[in-house]
Length: 258
Image (cartoon, rainbow, N blue to C red; front, top):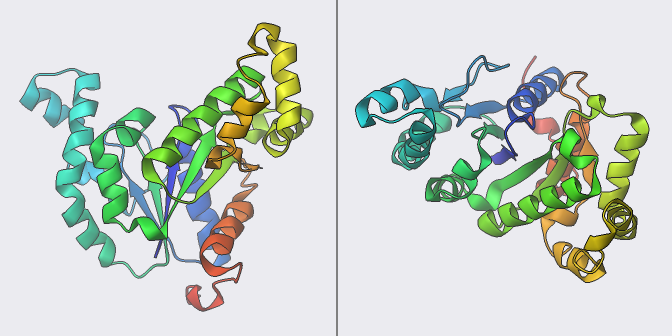
């Protein structure tokens, strides 16, 4: 069973991508299970097969602990670990090779709180893959792109799992902007040149040595542009999963009976 976690900043498109990718897999004949880990999500663009809201409700937490929405989110993140065993029992009742996790909107609640690491380790870290989402609006400036690279590196240090970098909502960018951002992920010399052009004073701070250090982590992996709106790029995500865990072989034997 392969666990794919979509992680990214608020508004980067985690829930939309979860729904789009699960829908693509279904159309291709592959069985998958979706897991919502965000207790505060409203109007999700998909129906989760497993939903943390069945165990944790923000309104109940706010009432019980007399806290506001932000405080409730923090408490909910810590309570997540308490329900891991029961969630695993529910997940084990499904026959599937692919589990797609939609993580909380506030990335730090999952990445920095101990419950996030406990969950990934409990659901088998060896069979897990993180899809780190690059917000297109932030990504199209050199400084914004580097900021997301740093976030991606911190996530990989935290969880130490295989990584795929995903440029979400690529349909919001012009084609030349998509090519530019993907080019930065492929060639750090292009990124360094863009940084120096944007902010010359950063030249000594964000130099080649700095970027080379980032290349030690998954933040250096090529970006895969996707669009949940148009369904593009889903096959690229699938192919990366296949390459990492099955040597690129298709799961013909894992297709659902139609």
